[in-house]
Length: 199
Image 1 (spheres, rainbow, N blue to C red):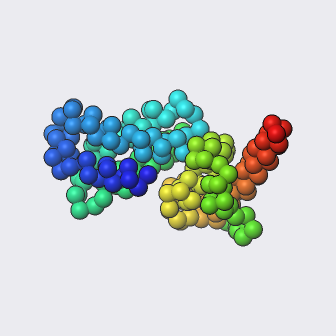
Image 2 (cartoon, one colour):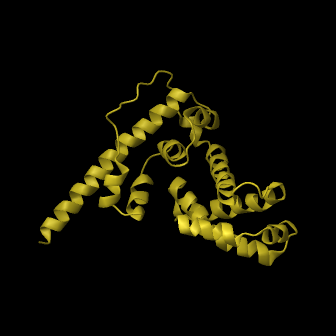
Image 3 (tube, rainbow, N blue to C red):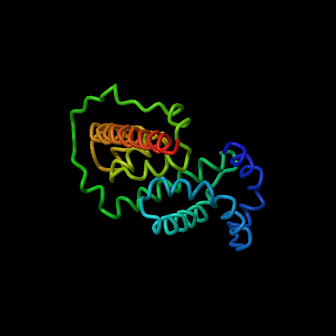
């Protein structure tokens, strides 16, 4: 993944960005091809519907193109692009009014025992399997978990985006961890039984 991102940084030149800003379709298409894998990965994490992923990606990339005239070459391209895509996905989430179903929870005590050891899970499940399991989370747990655990948003930032309290954000992330722990344990148990059955 790091090698791929380094390739993006090397391949996305000032000339390419300037050509995109000028509206040159060939440069825009080249940029789209370079950004497609990691932008699609972001969309797949947030969307439970495979049909929505293409729409999210294309509209998000359109916003990237529109934002290029304000892009400064002093900042790394990939995080800048990622932020635009995540903001677009969040805007779509709010526009769908799914966030209105949030229950505001002011008092929240985080269960310190709910912990997912990612290194341990990596040994059992590959990245694709983990993504499939994460996408099973119900809304808005999926959104809150992605924002907090994978994209580094604070609970205060999530609360602002989802129009809820930080306590509600913490509760949703904690519930997501509980559900993931249960699903991972069930998947691991199923894998072990499946292996034993074929021995």
